[in-house]
Amino acid sequence: MGLDIRLPIGLMFVILGPMLLVTGLVQGESLSRNTGASMLVFGAFMLIMGIRGQRRGSDS
Amino acid sequence: MESLRVSLAAVDWAIVVIYFAFVIGIGFVLRKYMKSSEDFLESGRSLPSWITGLAFLSANLGALEVMGMAGNGYKYGMLTAHFYWVGAIPAMLFVAIFMMPFYYGSRARSVPEYLKLRFDEKTRGLNAISFAVLTVLMSGINMYAMALVFEVMLGWPFHVSVIASAAVVLAYTYLGGLTSSIYNEVLQFFLIVFGFAPLAIVSVHQAGGWHGIQERLADVPGMTSIWSSVGSASQNPMGIEIAGLVMGLGFVLSFGYWCTDFLVIQRALAAKDLPAAQRTPLIAAVPKMLFPFLVIVPGLAAVALGLALPEKNGAPVYDYTLPLLLKQFYPAGMLGLGLAALLASFMSGMAGNVTAFNTVWTYDIYQAYINKKASDKQLLWMGKMATFWGVLISIAAAYLVKNFDSLMDYMQLLFGFFNAPIFATFLLGMFWKRATGHGAFIGLALGIAAGVTHHILKVKGVIHYSSDMAAAFYGAIVSWSTCFLITILVSMVTAPRPEKELGGLVYSLTERPKQTVVWYMRPTTAAIVVVAVVVALNIYFF
Image (tube, rainbow over all chains, first blue to last red; front, side, top):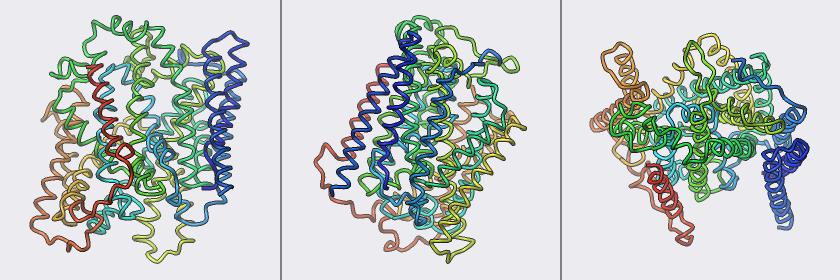
């Protein structure tokens, strides 16, 4: 319905992930660092899938 | 409760604010697509199965589920996994394979409407009114539980949490209807996973891994196994035995909820076609069977680590297990993520209830009884009004529960009274063409009455059980059996509907669609794989 949900999900995780990653690096906390990195990877994946989905939608 | 108080850093606040912005933003973007009542209340029946599947699961991840199950993990250990592997997965597979073709194929817009098509108006009315009332009350319970947690953890005043959460849920459900609720449930699902998975990993690691937990809890019977202690009620902390567990939880309560509760079925009905609707519960079953590792195992790790829960009236408050773990293990930043995950679970539960309420109110009460000739414009308007009033009634319910502590238990009890017998009505309706409307209505009414009577006899001390949970399981069995038998008896002496009117509504009178996909893509194949994994999990944790 108009909006590919992978885009906002990806965008949110791409914003939150680095925030946690940087916090973890500054504080020396591996938990924040690893979680932030995982969220960043997941967010980027969702974003790429969402963009590809949108392109495919507009092509057809 | 001072022991649970945490202070948030700027990064924690930022994470919570960003989460709120995305949730409301999704509703805002979707508002322009809400042109008809079908768009607003049914998502235009257009969504792919991975979205409806995750929403099917997420709508169930309310406050009572996430916090309650972590608390049960602390109290009962791995026995709590029965609520997933026995009390959810089989029912989810059943609704996918056997019931979804009738729900979706009949084009019913709601579960009560299916009852109208299969039986009659009065059976629909009984189900619609009871569901509408109980749904907004449950939404209020979610709101109350959330406000309580944030009062204890952050010192936020009760009304601030209630009003803020209600305003956010109202904003995105009012703007974007069911689609907004479903999209947000998907986002909330991922946030819940990323918010709680590190907690599970770190708490289990601290306790020495699974073997460390087993060693630490070796003296407490039944905490780290799921079947070896249910031979007798006295051998396990839940006070249940195998017959009550399998029949009460595994059959009546579980099938009553997952196969008939419109809150979850509505997500499947929003799917784009029948195969997608069938895949919805199957997709949901995969994360559902793994959820014990996310919510129960951390609770178990907390016991193994000897973490003491806050007490109220001399008894530990098990619902605070998750907040206690968040405080114990999460540094700044992670705390914001954990709180956002908690908010996500509360809000997905609330929004799920509100969107189910507005649909049942609009189609099964307003259109059926108040304005039978309502235009689509009027239905859309009423759907939006029902969303608004549903949230307001939820707020009132939250305050009611706050002022009358025991009301929360009564509301959940009431929910059980209605959920248990309704599955008998559906089972007979879908699989026995002779079942009649009079049979269904009288069976359902007497089934509910039997559940209430059973509870009164238990409270008066006439019948005894080893635990309240055992009483709930057996109460459900009594209620279901009464509905099942009475429906059959009354149906035998009343006239059935002509067979030609029941096509697409009853199993034996419905042509099975030809399978056009390869065998490994079929719903039954996926169900067999899920069963195999669940059996393996049961064997490992036997």
